[in-house]
Length: 439
Image (cartoon, rainbow, N blue to C red; front, side):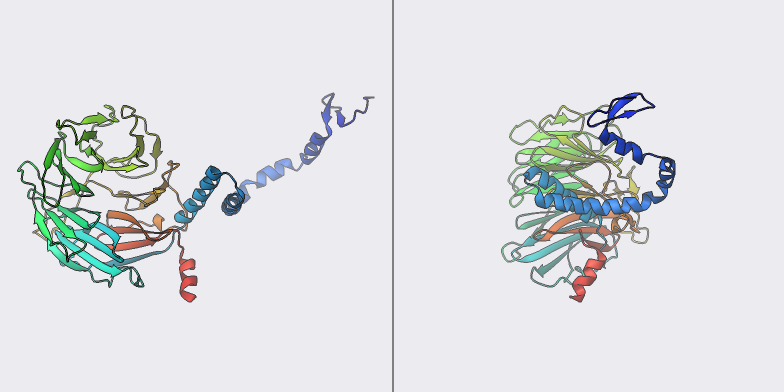
């Protein structure tokens, strides 16, 4: 007969002592265990739904009682991801186009207590709208004075804003640059060209202060002072430049050849350095977007749909620090308008991306005509929700995206598809909108 020892019990089958606490667990494991395991898959769907709700509530409770700043910030970001992915409120309107063309570029900015919005279409028309910040936004720009301002004769390829100036560019052998001041009382609207026959086909542009960088055929064109065009520099890339971005004196270009180059405007030589180069993947994988974040990270998108973040402090490292998976894009899609003979048919090779002003979320348009979103902190697969409007595809390709902060903490996503303009109230659901209207 085994001896009785405090806190232990004797297992006759295994011929050894075990703690009394483990006896409670062994009692739970009985003849009904297999039945419970067999019934588990049937309740999995309901359990996942309950777990999702508990996870959000748990994150909120943990954030309230967390004393560590980093931990609390991480939990608050998880809550924001859940809310943005649940967005189900979207409104659409149409810009009264003179030719019925598709909108190719869009930008909106707050300036002097007004909201200035600009759009361009495949017919080369540039439109503007100005509303007061204190006005009730009804109709989401449908009735807010959209008016045609100027025709550049060929497709508007980009619109960028910095300070009190808006710049629009057109695509084609005789590319033009439209200078549109936000304050029309102090400056006139004017149109210029790059005085170089080798500079044509403006694919993209980036404006920072008074310096304008253009992505053209086989080179980037830098205009130091866009107001008086004092200095114009040509940076040879050897391939069409589809993406540009700048950081003070440094200019980054992404080309049709799939190469990212870095130029220093302070050095007389126009030869750029190849960064993040990988000879096994750069061929036929054009770089379509470039954006700088946190002063040291460069976000790149390529024509095959890849989205990745690289560390600018280590330009020789070909491995991204963060990858964003699940985006869909392959190669060029042709935009054809056969019933309008005066419009230049071009290849729309770039799928737009956008980032919120707080640099928390990434939005990208896919070739399947859907918008996907990711967390810029974690990367990985897209944030999805069955109730989200982002699951629904558009009828026409998405040509422009922009995220704006209309009020403190209130984000809105603008998207253009065909001749329509769409506004997403990020984090807002239809039932919340109904409750607000009733109140």
